Length: 149
View 1 (cartoon, rainbow, N blue to C red):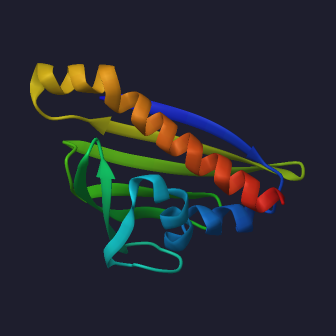
View 2 (spheres, rainbow, N blue to C red):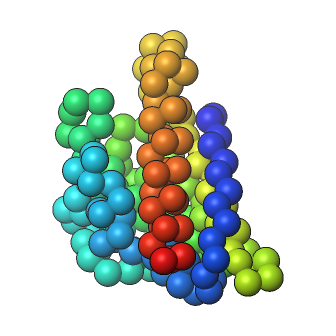
């Protein structure tokens, strides 16, 4: 099991941060480099508890699809999404929001496992972990920039 943890501090109301973090439209904008598009399930607006979204995006030169479901939801402090279909053997992303004075600490915890045994672990070590971390950091930086303008 691999775990990536990120912390982002945002000077905005917790409800606003929470809503932008679950916005399908914002995700598509922030992931324009990988041409991420919501192709099924919730494809626009805010995703909520028990809803699914299927993403199609270009990663490592190939178009991949990833279907996930919001499996836990406590407005405005927590939600998680879990892969239903995709290329990971396991993928679970927790989004935790904590109000600290006038700012919000947004914490991402991504748990994932890769298939293909030793080859998958090598691919993760060489490329995938860095790619996923960069992808999340880029998204979080854009979210922070948008809300702090």
